[in-house]
Image 1 (cartoon, rainbow, N blue to C red):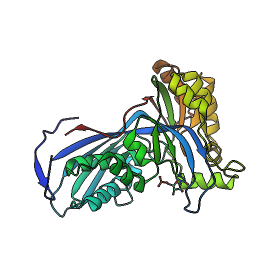
Image 2 (image 1 turned 45 degrees about the vertical axis):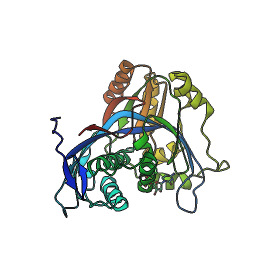
Image 3 (image 1 turned 60 degrees about the vertical axis):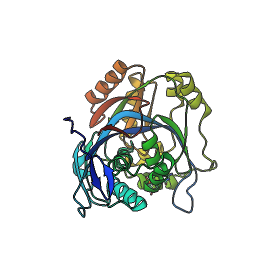
Length: 319
Ligand code: C5P
């Protein structure tokens, strides 16, 4: 992508540069334990997130006073992304402006690679990218904890999209603590054009019996142990997603995708988050490519993408 030289300017009385580009990563939930739905409509979670090298790029450019937040989206699945205030990136820019007293004038441009409605937190990645980009563009310089608080207001997965790497999420998934993680993990992701709605997957989870007799979700210690040891086989065996049943209920073809990944030697295969993306853990980057090729050949995915994790959260890559 061509680089734009930084030109100092003034937006809303705050010194800023004219263009900022931020890169934000997709996530996979290595473990997702879901408790009984609360009065607020949210489920308590105990999850382990890992950020993986499938990235959306967001550019924020200074705009004329009074022009508001403009958005354009290109890349994978762009046609199904809303461009108005339903878009989390637009909401992120408006929220940051409101809380910091800056005029919300910015032109946002997103280049998508993260599947839309795929269970990999693409919308949350874009929101995190918009927060980080506008904070830099407008010179608002929010402290990290304040940025994470704003992120949590936007959605349960947005704080992790800011933080990246590997972390445990509790509460709605927004209360983060980092996890010591050794080594790199190689993934093949099988994506579907038809996404799943996160609220619908949670509602199906409830309809199927929900958290049943164990309403207190807990992180599996074997999963944390495997990450600490850099033990990919141990991690593969410990991968778990309580939402998988619900996702399969809504998209039964996922059963075949999961089985094919395992038939091709995946150390473990799960539905990613609320689906329908299937995440297969491989032994190496070559093995990830082989799994991806087998899934493609069998027609078990609309698209496949290979990635490594962990990677950093939303960060400025160009100013
Ligand atoms: O926070 P976010 O907007 O990403 O959540 C989308 C939907 O997913 C919520 O409205 C809720 O239905 C469901 N959800 C949940 N429990 C969570 C996170 C999300 O029930 N911990």
